[in-house]
Length: 579
Image (cartoon, rainbow, N blue to C red; front, side):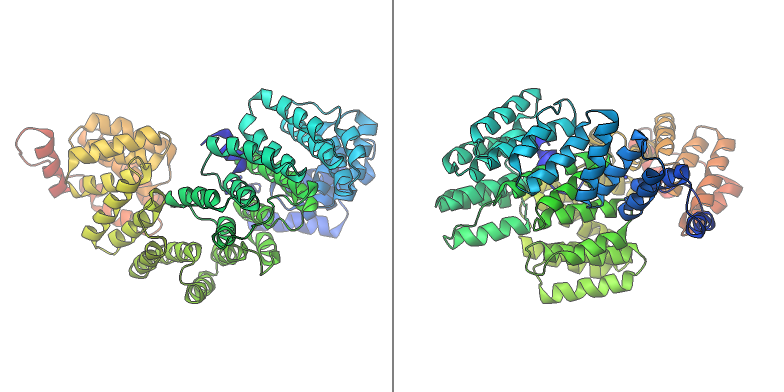
């Protein structure tokens, strides 16, 4: 995926200190019993920011800044917390104070400029942002915001020149998308369509680009072209409620409406794009700030609300996320997605029964809701309702058609459900169908290859599959384990040891991987280490299956390999009988 796609995909793409419940309770009690010191408030605010508890962060940093008003470090964190909590006016005031204390600050100017843009004071916004640099995300975003201010001031040509110059730094694809939006808001629809086509040709399956392009085509009365773009998108197995809304309009030969209806909504989309990119890079607190600025500029941009809630989910702030999901209007195309996410969060918070009940109700009401079917199937599978999960995935496949490359996942997860339900023939068929749709998918290659290895069948094709999966995901401990286990089954014990040791380094607490390494150690004569590894496998096993398996091995070790015809396949067959 290109960098532009990462900026514009809008998906979705994370910690409390290692303290027990009692420690956390004591800390909270301490702060509730007396006002924290400026240092204590500052440290508590930093932790709250890390956890995306922005309301708490803003309160702590307000306390710290009130007590240490001339400290630029404290003031800077305070304005960031205010902005990330949606308190734009307070953030702007604090940002101005920071500049008074410390001179120029790109992020502070960005927040001040955003407030001016919201208030349609475009000249003030442009002046505030004129000196912002272009060598950071804040600086690039500041340059983009300045261009939006110029667009609002009727100076589109100047705005376009600024964005084109910013594009010299390597973000041409991302920036041409926003040049198209600016042209569209400025009323230059023909120019906008030419620019958005450039963005589309670079990334034809990015949802935001597809939506903007088809809206512009539809608004120009070019309905057939819009339909072709959507058909190409759907042919990949891709779906999105916002694309569905545009499709409904263009199919009826209705103009679907502008992607960005004004300067504010266009600038909000910019904050959305950059916020998503920052979140994916791990800068979640600053990502939250950018997303909240977008929400401030365009309160009706439900797509930004949805991404912000997903950002909260990424740090397990599910209650806060559910407040955002509930706030998405019932008339929004994204409301069904929000309802599904809400139910999924109930499961994450420990109420799986209620999550399953709500999702079941959703699919009864709307049997073609693929998101709901997918999440319901996943939860049923987690609940070990494998037959029910397989039935749910079948409904999802029926709903989407099941023939596009993007549909591989439905066959993959249904295959897992069948495999867990002891219906291997059906599982194998589904895994093979998934690979037919997506031949290089590492998870499917690994699952099918490992299953064959574990059964002692198709060992050479299985090894080829797993090696291909490793090449695609070299840092996945589970896939590395599969490769090591394949070597073991083929009698290549020294290679198995080296590979399984690497897997254990990646997944040190996985009982299966530790058990596999113990077996490999035994076969190369390292019996003390084998028993040590089996002990680890038993100690980290939570459901007892591995513990039961290793109990006899801890006492008696592995049985000697029976005599077999020379060659790795014969040896592997012997191993299959003795394991």
